Length: 196
Ligand code: HEM
Ligand code: HEM
Picture 1: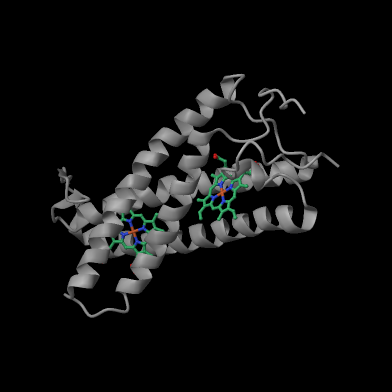
Picture 2: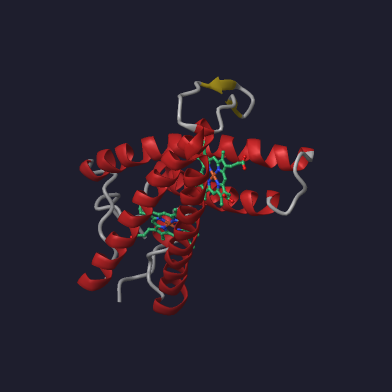
């Protein structure tokens, strides 16, 4: 059977998928790493190592969060890359947009808080040991406030991302539609389900 025409596109393009899954893995690692080092004694090499990795993955996430909205705007305006909305009711589409928008906002906020928090510690830090990040003055007196906010936003983000992931699994296993498959790097030989 001939392949379906590429446009209008039913699946996200490879770059959007890559950015999405780097975001998801980074968020999970950032949350988990902080909760693991909290259990470790202060000053141990593993605790210090996890903190350094947390900051490096945080910087990686910051880079992704610069590229991602730009790519989203570009791809949605390009007829070869634009994805057609999932086959859902208006209410579900509004809900999905609201959750995706809230996830973006929380991600930006969390990255900004992470940098402010780190700068308030007034110590040099690096990106995977490759180069130093310039130090900007943030009042060390704000350290506890910024740390508290960073922790609260981390919980908000992980709860909302968890609900978002459950919704994707619900679409896949209960509604049996294409919402999850659109974001999975499946081979072209795996067809999308026929619309019901
Ligand atoms: C853990 C952190 C996660 C974050 C921060 C996150 C964030 C987002 C955002 C902002 C979008 C909007 C589309 C875009 O701009 O690219 C999106 C789409 C999507 N995400 Fe996630 N996501 C996460 C994890 C997951 C997981 C674990 C799954 C699957 C189980 C998943 C499945 C999807 C799907 C299927 C879409 C496309 C929805 C559609 O076509 O309307 N996400 N995600
Ligand atoms: C989605 C992104 C992120 C999540 C989920 C996250 C999560 C967390 C959590 C839960 C903590 C422990 C907070 C506490 O107990 O007070 C923490 C600490 C920290 N985070 Fe993040 N973080 C993220 C991004 C970042 C970024 C982008 C940076 C900076 C580049 C950063 C830098 C830090 C620093 C410096 C600490 C304190 C480390 C220490 O105790 O010395 N985080 N993070």
